[in-house]
Amino acid sequence: MTAPVIAPVLATGDVAVHFGGIKAVDGIDLALATGEILGILGPNGSGKSTLLAAVTRLVPLTRGRLTLDGADYTTAPPHRLARRGIARTFQTVRLLGDLTVLENVQLGADLHAGRAARLRELVRRGAVPEVAAAVERTGIGDVLDRCPGELSYGTARRVEIARALAAQPRVLLLDEPTAGMNHSERREVADLLRRLRDEGLAQLLVEHDVQMMVDTCDRLFAMNEGVGIAEGAPADVVREPAVQRAYLGKAAHGAGDR
Ligand SMILES: Nc1ncnc2c1ncn2[C@@H]1O[C@H](COP(=O)(O)OP(=O)(O)OP(=O)(O)O)[C@@H](O)[C@H]1O
Ligand SMILES: [Mg+2]
Image (cartoon, rainbow, N blue to C red):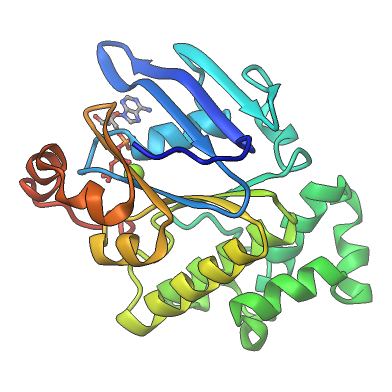
């Protein structure tokens, strides 16, 4: 097993989330370093999205501990996390259909700065710098005045990433960000994530595309039925017999269209 040599920006200690008798997540220890992409690999239903929900405080923990820069946030309310530097995208695109693309992206910035009430005024004055940067990075400049319903699936996903970046996070959690994208769109997103990594952004990335995960991630953490089964260098993890059995033995597929 390899572990980051510097102190983790985000860590989970024995995190468990049970839904009645279902142990969706059952004792996960993760440590994410600054400037690292840690990939989470696992078959459908293995607990990846539940783990991200636990880390972003969207489901209650059955047990365990969450820390950000060493500070405990196990009981922090989820709406506080943007200000503390954690942003995420969802497996199913969650954009506000009544707002334009630009307004959706600005919501990310507003969450960060706590200025939601001034959204309309900010929109009228033009993009704030963090929004302009997020738009530029994700290449959505041509669709700013559109509504989410008019966008292709791949573009809507890039808008979600832009909204997360507008919050200027230090930790970004991405749940199947390229599901529904074509090959060249996937490569563009993978390139973007690597550039962000090189600028120091720590990322937890969930994806089913094994080759993309090997190419994109610095480390992989494989899980099955709520528990970790392998962790380390991507090429090593995907060769582990336990991972081959759990992941490659089942017909895993992207679930972004659900
Ligand atoms: N809110 C919930 N209530 C009850 N069970 C849930 C809930 N959310 C998830 N589960 C169950 O927890 C387990 C893990 O689900 P989860 O969505 O975390 O898996 P996943 O690894 O993200 O799967 P996929 O690759 O299909 O997205 C599954 O058995 C799922 O049915
Ligand atoms: Mg999922």
